[in-house]
Image 1: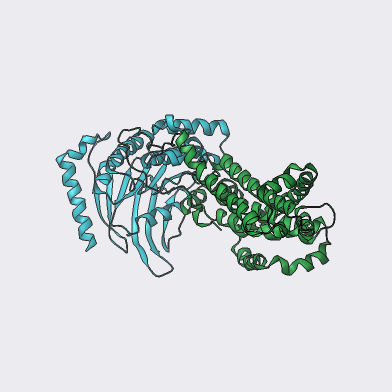
Image 2 (image 1 turned 45 degrees about the vertical axis):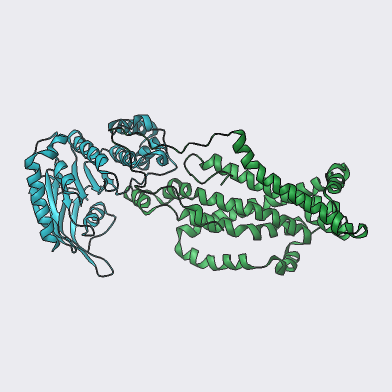
Length: 251
Length: 299
């Protein structure tokens, strides 16, 4: 599939997506939205509302039962909920994997991997095996792995859900910085409102099953965003509004 | 079969603590206890003491319970050492037979590995083949070897070929089951990753399924290696033409009531089993010890 010509040059567009599983569960109803280059969109919603299903549909892992997705799947970045590092490869080997699958030659993929590892700050751990890494470091390695492809579209499936709060904030800072330097179109899934508001240009609220986009918020803060933003009154107000929508949709 | 303890090391989020700095410190590795005289003693003393107790009980049976004319039933340990191990004529005979059986066991194991890997790989690729083949593998496994001894003799004669056949029949099943289990053990998320990046079937097998299967494969190898030694001895017992193996030797000694030699041969057979088991444990440690926790002969 290739990107359609629209005025906004959307990198990723969902048109009337619906998803009903074979067992009759309706996971998503009529989801339509798009993410343009230079946009970082986050979807917040209660657990089980079909947020992750949207990403699986975007990437082609699942076929929707209604609607279409427009995206270039050739170099799609997808960061999973778990780091999904291969335990028998060290950090360098893991980060090289995607370039390897795409048939990039050895010298080039080594260069790409080292660069990505440097970007996420794991240079001194490139020889370590996953079992000796902390949860946050595994997630960094997973990020670096995706970065090697320099994907124009980046999908994040609740990647920092399993790490502690402090690590999560650090990873948010870094992701936001990456977004700034790499300039990809980002679609991020989370159930943390603060995480969503801190990183995004736009926040979408998804209702409980069947998932529908029920509200949309533009986030006005300039990049780079500093950690102190989290203590800004405006930030708190916006978080509050998102939270209110989220609770409203839950009833 | 120890399928239960083959889980991979990955427990997502289980060790997510302690990374506050942008570049977080690695989690503290469990420090290996230092080898002190005390810890070495603690490791080796209990088996030594038990061993001494067993030898003591043995002497008691030989000299205390058995009258001299019935002592052939259980010769005392030192006589076994003298007759079975220190008498070169006897010991060389045992070693030669042991070597013959070892060869049979290795060939049998080699064949089992080839067949097992092949079948497990096919089964992992096509569910239908797995469904078709698996029941027969279980049946093969359930056949008491004694029941098909005559058949094996008809088909392959009473020499080495039949001995190898017994080895294969006995040692094949654990290799297939463990390899298949291992090939299917790669996590869903990893498969998704390979799917997303359009990996071919072969690439997926080579870079994901086989590496993920290694711990299970080694567990299967350790079981099968031991079984193939048993298979070689049992096979030799029934199919004695050609080179004399341990099974023939055991048969000969027992028919001549040569208790010392008999026990020496039994001890050497068991030693062979132990060596094979340790070898594969070592191999496992070398191959996957770097990334997999439950490897090495010590656990």
